[in-house]
Amino acid sequence: MDQPNLTSPARAVPIPSMSDTPVWRTMALTLLALVAFAGNSLLCRQALQHSAIDAASFSSLRLAAGAAMLAGIVRWRGAAAAPARRDGWAAFMLFAYVACFSFAYDWLDAATGALILFGAVQVTMFAAGLRARERLSAGAWTGVAAALAGLVYLVSPGLSAPAPQGAALMAAAGLAWGVYSLRGREAGDPLTATAGNFLLALPMALMVSAWMWHDARVDAPGVVLALASGALTSGLGYVVWYAVVPRLGALRAATTQLAVPPLAALGGVLWLSEPVTPRLLLASVAILGGIALVLSAQSRATR
Image (cartoon, rainbow, N blue to C red; front, top):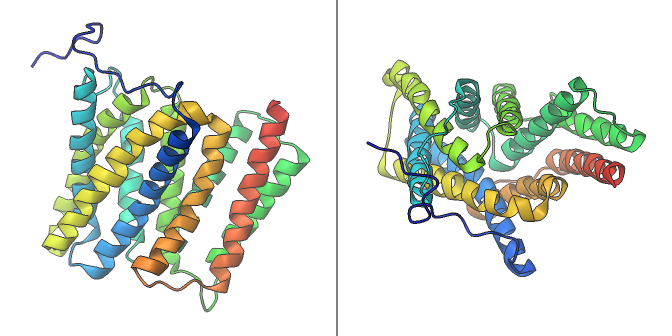
């Protein structure tokens, strides 16, 4: 099938620009995107703990639904359903994130999983910056130390510590997502690139499902939750996020993502009846406060 012509005004349907968007609408769309990201944790936790679906099947269905949703949106825009330059490494990182994320929620609650995930993502980004010889101020180093201390405290052995296998898998998911985000800087159009990466990652997830077929189990609620995670909180969530990021700027966008773990915690309490432990609260303050301190120091240095 011929690919749509990107240069034809009759066929190209761009996402509306945010340059003339009222502030209240930008704020509303930003909140919607953050709720969607937190919703990924809630939907996965709900599916694995309260339905009969297994983690491998959830991952495959999530990627399939996300690929279908993103490909449809990209085609509606008049662009190809996959990026011109296929990035197999980025697709593998996306697969690793989705798979580790799903299997981790066999052991973790929604709030703890989201906190470990975003903590690991930020640690990965900081490490990449140091490797690129980016210089950090004393305030930024203080924030890094606080975030690392909070992450270590959260996963250290104790009465209320999360299961080590779940914490390790979620940290791996955060590492994979951090690497994927770094690769995305060179991807050109992020929406088109993400659609292509979902398509490339799907066969990898299907191979894991085939390998674990003896443990496969699905039921209607689990399938619905997996499809919602892929099409809505992943697919549409990314579309909304890509629309508001140019309006927010890089530092503001990174800062606003600090709201995802608290939103996941609130959703876990209200929807899944999960407890909020003192360890989780203290670790949240250290990790989120440390990351906010780093971003604040970066903002001052940039100015």
